[in-house]
Image 1 (cartoon, helix red, strand yellow):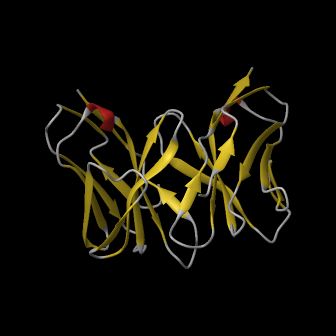
Image 2 (cartoon, helix red, strand yellow):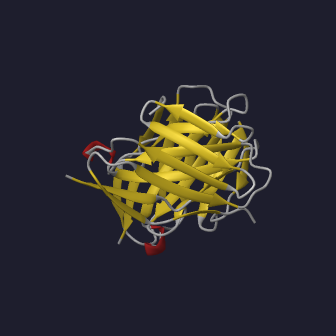
Length: 112
Length: 110
């Protein structure tokens, strides 16, 4: 998975609790992304980062926040999880010199 | 906005060729990709093509690009049971943004 580690790989939580997912890369790529994958929707971009402390919203950012304090780490936080956020979350990285996105193995999140 | 469309399912017999199709709307697409996703795993890059190319071949995989019709296809020759997976088409115009299709689930029958 191109030097990308997502943690945890599986999580079950309750509605209203905060959840943080972590993405760690060893490739020193500039861009990092968080997607969610749901049946019938493919991959939808939640947030992305184009550098340390530089982040922006994707198409489904409501209810999510991100932080990137180091090149290698990109955190996705659900401040107050809802059942609609039950999904598989993927982290991806890319570099503008290469124009290829590489994906982590995913985190399966269930919000009960 | 930009969109990428794929059919949802394809079923083929082992040993036959599979053709997975994709259409996209962004006329400024410069790179087009095919990714494979096996159960419980992330997306694995299979191949990609630059928009100034018509065809790219890589072992059993052939990618055809019709830029006029904004149509991309992936042909898998001699399809095997290990090719059963979801295949995603994606495109980018060279910025940070990548647009993905909904994925085509390929089922290979023994």
